[in-house]
Amino acid sequence: MKQGDAEYLAALDETVDILRRWAREGRSDGWYKSLSEELKAKGHGVHYRGPIISLLLGDACRSDSQGLDPMLSAIVILKATGRPAGQFFELAKGAPFHRTAADWTWEQERARVFARYRES
Image (tube, rainbow, N blue to C red):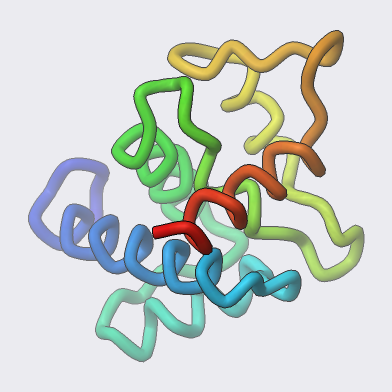
């Protein structure tokens, strides 16, 4: 699987669907490993520690938002820390999100994701 190929795009669609469902459910246990397992059950072999999952989560955020909407992958966390991996915070700093520590926290972003999908 490579970013942009048909298999990747199918896994991306599934990733967005899973994350939106988790957000509607208000899941606070959305671990990277759980996402990997759900993707595997749908026929997408994406390891939770591999580079593809980071690419999928970044692309899921970008496809779900124009930068103003909450970052969908804010609800995916590491089991060990209860927080997203470092790649999430790097993504948050860059385009189109431009989140800065002065006016933003991951916890606020996660709450915005839950609020957005509970309303829809």
